[in-house]
Picture 1 (spheres, one colour):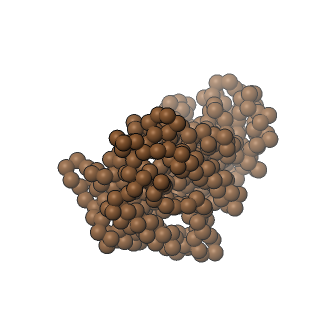
Picture 2 (cartoon, helix red, strand yellow; picture 1 turned 90 degrees about the horizontal axis):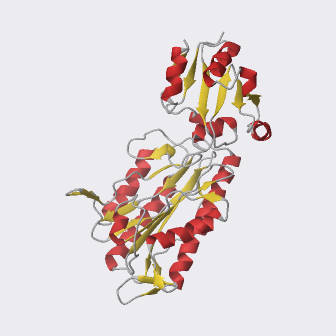
Picture 3 (cartoon, helix red, strand yellow; picture 1 turned 90 degrees about the vertical axis):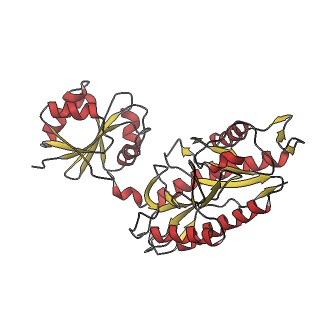
Length: 370
């Protein structure tokens, strides 16, 4: 008799683990379980027919009534009895309310130590296609931004005018997002940060965009149909960049290309990060802290992308686990200085199981837009 089963209670929209395990997504919570190699989901009548059609192969779909619904704690007690288990292994983010109630019912609940599905790190060919689809949508978004900036003009006040008004971060973001929505994507926090705002890597940007200064555009849509993400960053200047900004752009571009060349089976993620960091340091761009602001290159070089926008593996100084093949990772070096802004350039790489890295990003990289 197995003493513990695996259990998730979540919606597919909010839980990448649920979407991965069940093979489909719902806006409402449902139950997934696995014991002795057999997996199943327990759905409400509203979702049952769709679940039967969309569930991952090998996942059996049950109605709530089959487990004594609609009371969830009774369903879970009946599930444990049917599976002949004494408790459940749950994801780290499992709801505390249900953990408490299960324990009150005499069932053990233990959270997984770390990633619930470590195999999510390694993508199948079908998963790579889904990420590429989202990446192409991100590229469509940034190309729309390029078009807007090409159509615009620079005012005497050093701002950007488009269609009779001053172009703002909010306006440019909406143009990017609309282009992606038309391709079936869900935009999530698109960054359009100009000038000094670009020195804060996750500042989404607000207000009028300055001409002749960098505009950082970080675009990471999720497919509404598949749940897989894309991730792309480009930095451009509307007008003429200063010599310093040009030098920083060249340093970041060189670091990105170096990092991409090192992504392959057996590579040490920490060494990939360190090589890119050293490259920018040698180009004259130092990292440190002044007052309350960091400057230079002060974040990890990259992260995994899949059903989460940030997942394993990390390309960071703290990760010494060699790449094994099948991972999708970003390579996104950046330089950030409060006095003039930031430069970040990001591509997606797939670690081919055969050994080499393959770039999944196709959109061009350049600095100035006239």
